Image 1: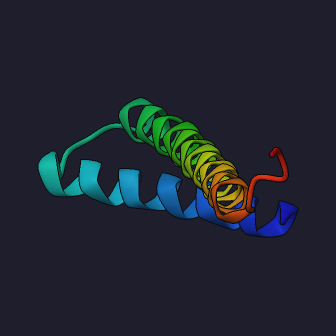
Image 2: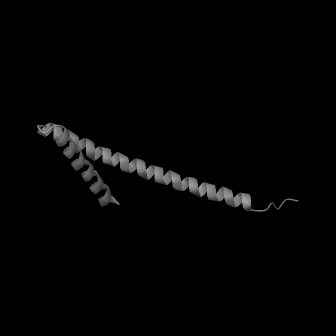
Image 3: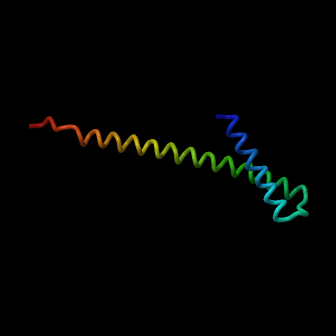
Length: 78
């Protein structure tokens, strides 16, 4: 998903610059550049956090399914 990750980061940068222009219509180049970098990095961090949360949820679902399978198995001890 390399290209999609980069597209998300670019979209974050663009959104940050647009928000900066809405807040301060006279924002200078350095302010807009800082906003673009922050948006780019922020979008990347959000994507990583979402991926981690999704992976953790899948791992938890797998653990719960395994536990349910163990509980449903009859005991073979007599």
